[in-house]
Amino acid sequence: MSGEDRTRSEEYEGVLEKLFTLSTAYKRFLGINEESLRKLRAQRDKILSRMEEVVFKVLDSLLANDEALEIIKRTGLTKERASQLFKYSYTLFLEGGYDKEHVQKIFRIGLAHARVRVPERLMILTAGAFLREALRSLGKVDVSKDVFPVLSNCVFWNLCLMLESYELSRRLSLLKATGISEKLYERLISLKAKEIYEKMIKFVHSKIGVKPKPQENFLDS
Image 1 (cartoon, helix red, strand yellow):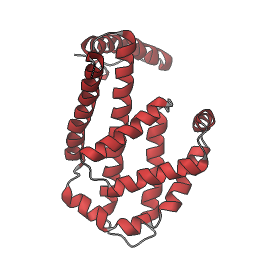
Image 2 (cartoon, one colour):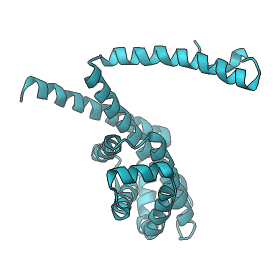
Image 3 (spheres, helix red, strand yellow):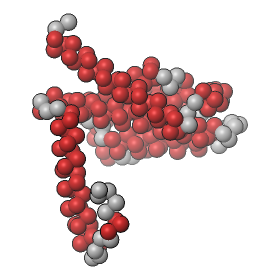
Image 4 (cartoon, one colour):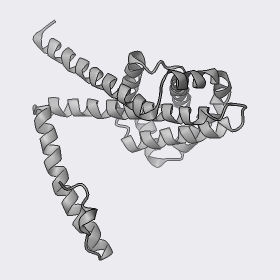
């Protein structure tokens, strides 16, 4: 392995390790543990019995969105392939181990979205449609009510890691393209974010004709 390949491998390994660490923190935050996953998996067959309906409704939402339609047209994604991908994701919510292997699968999904430039907002909206239809479908089958929050937490866990994968891959691409360090990248983002925040606050308040109150600048140190 060349020095360049070794460096690249170390960078990719670093990204995965960061995701593994975040995945553990997210599980703790959302209360996902072996007991909650056991409850969810106990209802697996009943939940999956409504999968076709859930996926159909999510696809309806997606195909009614102009931005999504443009991406579908640009990438050549068929409705059948989109349905397969949604079924894979829905099954992963229920059968995934919420471990390192699961994180790697989510990482691949996030990378795939980044590669074809699916905006994060559309990823969030699609996850919202998934959760809406999943919870609606559970109301039609005899499942324990304590499964509802567990499924919701699992959807959010997967979504958060997808977004992190997306962001980390884009950041790595930018660092490679510009040749700057991650520390400098973070510093530049911090500086420009503060500048933009201050200007936007003034702009917004000028539009509504009021002066900002001191406590409204809650992000300032």
